[in-house]
Length: 235
Image 1 (cartoon, rainbow, N blue to C red):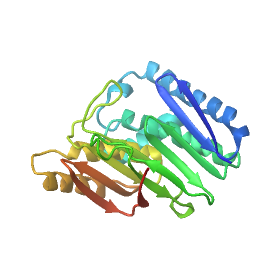
Image 2: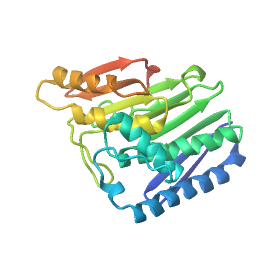
Image 3: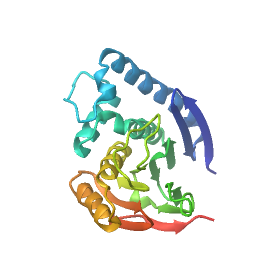
Image 4: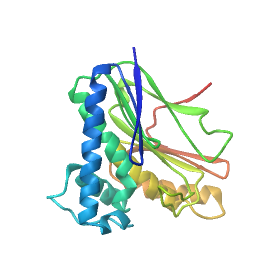
């Protein structure tokens, strides 16, 4: 049986799926601690929150901050571009330490997942209404652990985007890299010619360590690259 649990911690909307219900309270505590550590760090280092480019390493920073710095350096973006992914990575790490055979944790659309056998379907969201929530990735044991993140070319109160893609979904070795990379690749998808714009995104992705593959949607055109889990239709 798979158990589901949702909780809001500050601006983070956390959704957990696991085959071990007893791990959930500890996962929530773990995530709260990491988010508090991040907030405390930002209070002492306010520029970290607004940096749009990678920042210098800080060996004395909390673990979540170090993960964000590493991911942002790989993708060439500011560290906050990977915050949601870093949170779910740390949640997944704790779930696996506690013996979960199925572990999925999502935060604002960014996903960290592991399965020891049971297949998992992760929905893909996009600004293309005819596709959003109607296609997904079929995740198998061989695919995991992995991170999945989606970025769109529309800025909001939580994210900053300089690109025009309807959506960029990145599959990577962890969610922090996927999160930062999705932002970076989306930023590269600009221009009137859809195929040329998508190719710019693919070229950007090729230079980011840790990416497994991705899906770029722009002006009703689709670009696929790398090694992707099976794409399935969601009823």
